[in-house]
Length: 327
Image 1: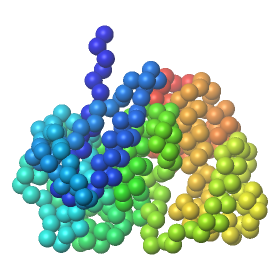
Image 2: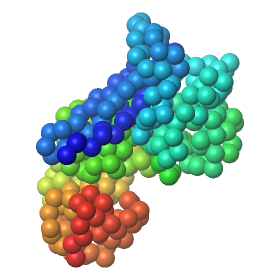
Image 3: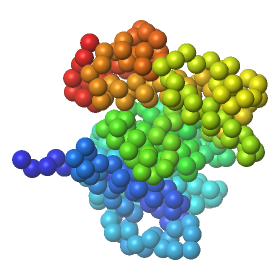
């Protein structure tokens, strides 16, 4: 039997492309492997014209593919370019770019990193949808595209196969999210470990906007996070987290927000959902048993939090990633 075709990810680059934003999807999707060690994605780079593309750095990229490969893509990703920061070219959709985007097949997943969202918005792809971009560019984006439901405070958004992400590093979160959506937490976590990045940050987590870099001593909350991950099946309160790093509740909450951008209890909920996802994928334990081990207490509480966080029930999640249901 022939091996199934790899999911094809095409990165559409423009002159002035931010180099890191090409490297992120190449690295993360390229690292994803099946349980048998086989690659799960084929990642290609395309430009409006194949050949040299000048990066926003002191080098030139030799791009092998033209826009025709967009017609073969399962996922298209548009990273940022210097053009997105110039008043003369910001949000301008050239005829050549419009023709390239028209080659994308209906149903193809489309995503942007950082100000690549300007291109999606200019093409009408984001009309009526939630979207985000780098917070510095949010005022200009909102003025140009009032028909888009812009949220400048989140890491990434998703709406019916159209995704946008905030500043450069949030492209990591976006790609890990897509890998998790395609193949589950086990594959996504393996990729995250291999690239030494957090395995999961919710799209609704705040961007780090105009906040000072935390002082080195604020890393004391890392001890509380490590302690919590080892005790997820127990009752964990804000006071117990603060005690784990020997600071007051108020100090702990402030330092935790400085480091993560979210509250301690929101972070704790995300970790419990993540633990439950792993157990749903890798075990035949009942939902009630998993709810206890992940710290939700009851199956009803876990079902409620799954619907609110992931938009599906635990059973639906398990069926998606294991192809079977367990009571």
